[in-house]
Length: 197
Image (cartoon, rainbow, N blue to C red; front, side, top):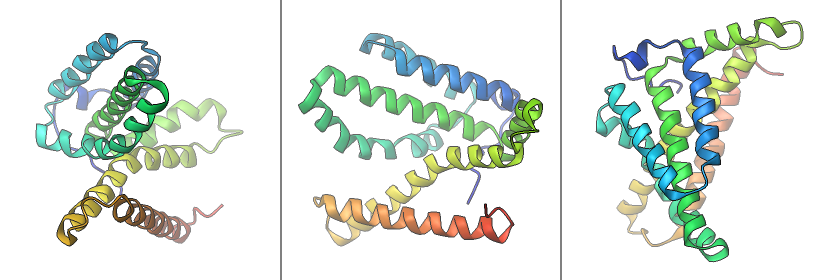
């Protein structure tokens, strides 16, 4: 279940996981604070350049980012109604960029490298914090973005096959049920490996 690593030899692949985690946190925070659409447009160019620098094929990148568009199809109109078109567009671009940045990280960094980075980062606090558990939690959180994207894609394919493309219920209910079922399976797998408290 874990692991969408896309092997490569680019400078992004070779960069230490700890450096990439730090940059991911800084860039996502910066994107969240950018006040205008032109600034977000410039950030979008940077994100596209990161994908190019990592030599990630367009098809692979699109598979990671595209499912968020279906979520935005519901969220953006609501934001538009309550806060106006500019706020809705800003929110939409911010979310797409955050997902894209997380995708760059997961596609260029093995989960084991993330776990090792967390152990290094938390080593000074090992008296109070279990670095292995924190690293596992972080790896699972990062992995959940593309995992949820896969669930959304499967539901969309099933909707098309059943001819229920116009029904929001036929989309939302299966996604929620599959997400909960996957969470149960993950919990059982972790418990079987002794990670149960």
